[in-house]
Amino acid sequence: MTLMDFGQIRKMLELMREHGLVEFELERDGERVRLRFAETAAADYGPAVPGGNVPREVVTIEAPMLGTCYLAGGPDAEPFVQLGDRVSTGDVLCIIEAMKLMNEIRSTCDGEVVDLFVENGKVVQYGDRLFTIRPPAEA
Amino acid sequence: MFKKILIANRGEIALRIICACRELGVKTVIAHSQADSDSLPVLHADERVCIGPPSCAESYLNIAAVRTAAEISGVDAVHPGYGFLSEHPALAEACEAIGVAFVGPPPRVLRLLGDKSLARETMAEAGLPIVPGTPSFELPAEGEPLGEALGFPLIAKATFGGGGRGLRVLRSFDELRSALPAACREAEAAFGDRRLYLERYLEDARHVEFQILADDERVVNLGERDCTLQRRHQKLLEEAPSTALAAPSRRRLGALVVAAAKMVGYRNAGTFEFLIDGRGDPFFMEVNARVQVEHPVTEMVSGVDIVKEQIRVSAGQGLSICQEDVRLTGHAIECRVNAEHPDTGTPSPGLIRRFSLPGGPGVRVDTYAHADCMVWPHYDGLVAKVVTYGRDRHEAIARMRRTLEMTVIEGIDTTVALHLRILRDEEFLAGGHTTSYVDRLANRR
Image (tube, rainbow over all chains, first blue to last red):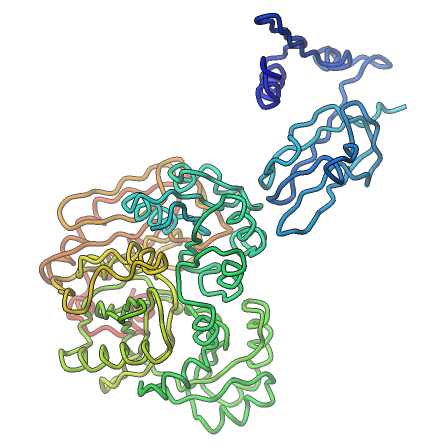
């Protein structure tokens, strides 16, 4: 993608979140990028209404070690998770490789994968954000 | 010369290494903990890698993380600084395994000198006088007869310890018997090995250490430092030259140290520590196989950049000086400004709100601290090293006094007030102080 690379998209998402923007669109030379938060994100900015849309905490999964992050089990394999997937506690989200050892990074909660912050094969430092999981609403 | 070095350390020594690297045209990567993400060394390094949470065990002592950082950042060498992993053979070996240079002695030398009991025996063979003592033992029951035969007072030391930690002075057999089990447990917890050895305890001694640099061709002696001023076996103030040594002793000890270093195949920077007893007789204690906190004192009187020489040696370029080039002139003093209460020594971590140290002739300050800087409780309390140089001891002391008087550090307690007391005290000024001095100074209040 030439208009915006993955790193720039990630930065844009952070800026949007920071400034409370829900939607962003950029068009240049015939290429277009549109970033839009899911509907429930808008509800996060409204007051809490009993029985209505209640803002939900998201859980951020951070890198527990320095290493190289792989989003799939092998070069031709399917990624462990994609945006929008539902995961359960303990599901493998990615692998961080350090010193030739593969460390499985597992979800700490049930929920929906709403953010992905890392590219396949990139180095992550201790504490870097990897994923954001949104747990299901209270019944 | 290396293209890029990984600094596996923090605080003032990380900055010191960055200084040397910049002067040599070498790029730097710093492996740091989360607590140090906003620190000056991280700011000034060319690259930075966060390897763990604040805790030492999970960051600066984490060999796997440091090794990964070295691999990932594509460095040619790792400089371990002092403390942390600087004398761990395992880190030196991990560097070898990934084809990266370790700025320090080779693993074999680290293993030899890291076993403090074995180091004593080796140095005795090399002709150095050693404090009368016992071999290493694992069980308190083995230590009891050894201690009894040695006589009291004695000092129990961890075989794999060092740096003034894990020492217990024992003045009677009953004290020995009740202390040994705890001492073994503490040695295990702190150093990973429960073995201890005992030495006769020299009261009222002088602590004198010799700085050497070694490459494949030579060992160069940069003279001694006097580190007698200690509180609870931790150095507070260091100076060069030592008032405890007359020229003949200085020459003799220096020659013995060089010979011993050659005998063990020493490489890179190292320090041979001695205690000098009340009669002026020297006794070897241990070798510190790393660059030391107080190295600036030697740099000031010799003009040699010890850290640059370290890097040159590990890059295979060899030392830039030989013994004939070494001229020691003037007098230098270093005061360790620690984040602790000046009288009680209670640690005082926290946010520094004001930080101002004067410059002027003959003053050098090595520090990572500044206003709005956090001094974290996870690490040692060294905030700044204030070093002064003068044509003689009198001038060095006068410079240190006025520098510390003009020092403003607010937000944490520091040892500045204690240093000023020392620098105005008759016994220190006369130069005859001993290892019991700081405690006696406290009792005089």
